[in-house]
Length: 479
Image 1 (tube, rainbow, N blue to C red):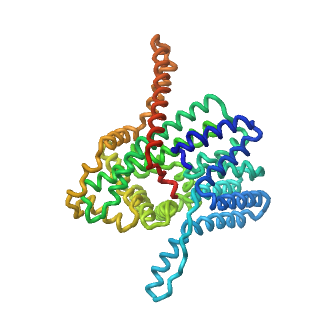
Image 2: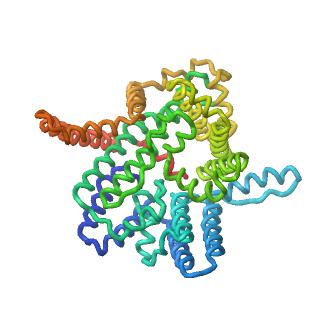
Image 3: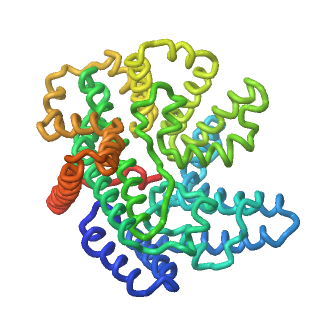
């Protein structure tokens, strides 16, 4: 079940809201836990036991950590259990495939392993569990003794499938105090509808054409089509994933839970370093606090710092998927972070602002080729086409095939929406609200009416497209 689907919008969410109001505060967590498990099992009831097993193991490990004096040994065991579970489901086929590639060189009989299913959201709920256990180990929080509250932290449906990654110490105090209230509920609806519009009206529109372009055989690619494809994908992945985060944060507000922001307009950054302060912030912070700093951060000299950065982004790429193309994407970003520390950042900083911005977008789009391509080989061929090494005629596959009016409109809207337009509008609204000028009050009233009407229009347009459309995946569901 995904947020941008009729069954979620018109059945699941209304039932959960009404149910939360009816059960009262005492039973609200239990009810939300039940709803979250239904939400998860809707997608694959056969594999729901994996998340239930993870909850049980980590609840027990957390209590053990709080009671033992051998905390290092227990936290090492806890990390091993969680990473082992993740590796067994996510990386088993990848490991066997690469081992067989090596052993064939020596005439060794290859290992045989059937396809291992990847449970939905396992990367996210594993990182949530690790966050909890490490926070307990560090003494930042006490072990959660209420199994329902702990299970709700792991399974909260707004962030269960694709984040944002909520660290336990950021949410622990809210688990026992959250409740539905009018102003936050209204704000949550607005944030949810904003995300729904970003997903359905922009991401889905450009995604169809991006998929078509990335399905073209590399021998038929031309530079204009290749660049168009990666521009469309650059917009798709941002508006797809940031839309999911917007909807998750909006749903959290609706139920009285506040999650940290996950995106801060990353495409307006002027360096890769700044980009990673703005993109998937919850993942960046997780790696910083639970991996980069424990590895030594920037405290061990330049070479050690560079090694730590590359290691973090190697693992970041691998976290996104068991594929060498994801590893290449992670190492690509890690390399640019190292180069910016070695002096490239200072050189770029001296450029005029438009050129700094162009540098960021060029590097990010090249990186997205590795992220989007199904194989590393295709990624290299695609990059070759982008620099004019393609062999396509430009007749069978040309840019005009993909630039339909709705796609061009979505591209323009995406380009505008990639900047901080919403915060600017919020600032204008706040100025109107506090202004003492005679015309401020009626202008503020008109603004509020217009905002409600716009929200309703976005919802109706999105719902209409959802009912009549068939293309509606979320990119990060497969991680």
